[in-house]
Length: 211
Image 1: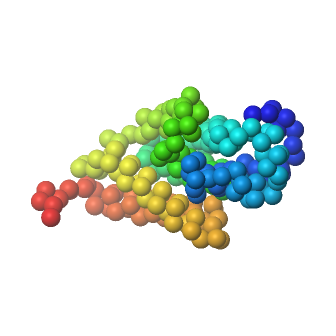
Image 2 (image 1 turned 180 degrees about the horizontal axis):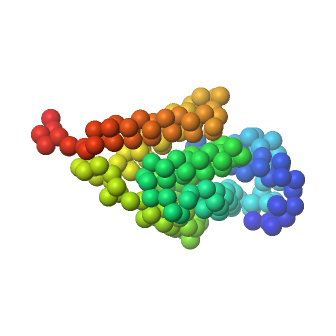
Image 3 (image 1 turned 120 degrees about the vertical axis):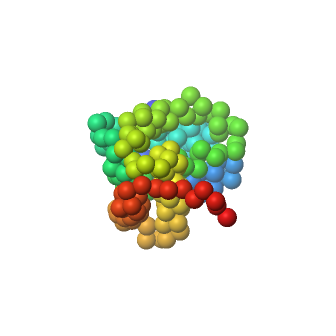
């Protein structure tokens, strides 16, 4: 990437970044096109290629940018001393919400990148793929799953909550009036509801004879 990209006005930088994030988040690398990106960003294709060189260059840049940006948000928001699963998850979602206020499609893009099927795209970001994963692993390791009521499998509960959050994110992006703050409040509502269901009973007894 041409380092002079950062000499552009911030508004134009963000327009190009957000356009690429949106196209790759919704269409993936294989089906997303530079035509779609320049149309969304309202810039010329020549300008896009001047700064990024190619579609692959644009993908690699927004991936690296997203990882760096999200890492900064997570590290500044999640309390390293917090051990409660639900509180940690709220802090994670608050960090994501902050990121999405400036870059609405960033989290969707990062989610989609986990299932990217283009070898070209995967290889281009291979060195960076572990950066964000390591941050999430560090956060996950601080959670005290033993503090959950007896019978609750903490790892499975965490996965269930992650699926819930991703489902809400995908669903809300179908709504043209999407607002990160509203999504955050909705996610917190679900987290509080599930927390109350678990702690009000005092324990969780799995069905030993599932149908």
